[in-house]
Length: 157
Image 1 (cartoon, rainbow, N blue to C red):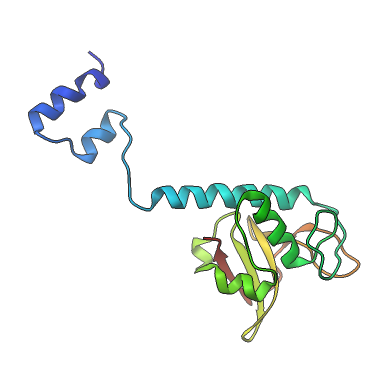
Image 2 (image 1 turned 180 degrees about the vertical axis):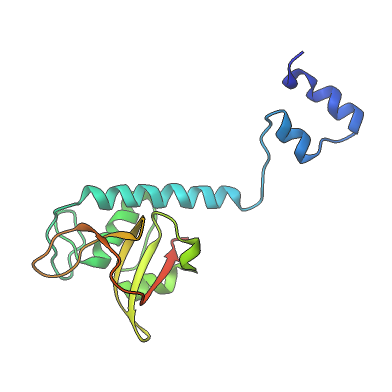
């Protein structure tokens, strides 16, 4: 008799199945909020892949793609293609994300660069202290190490 065949008998003996019993026999457990976190992770992963696919695209102030980008244009474009809408500017994007600690950051989260209270740049966290971003005039979309400690992190909702 396999573990799956024993589930009804386990439930009958216990009256109800505990989460540990269900987990032990390989059943799925629904956790409130977990589905939305998983969906957010999937969207963020897609957005990260889309941003990476734009490697080498030229920077152009005010551009939102698909061939030229500024920093917030790249994040807007990437998340839009992944199924999430973001506002246009880095500051507006900062204001609409769920702010998280550096220790909680994951690939696909947004990285906001600031001076005092002014958010001046945004990129998509790629892991290992690096971001995909459209840096400045004369440059191209690229992967780069985060160069300052004056950053905040946000998770797209």
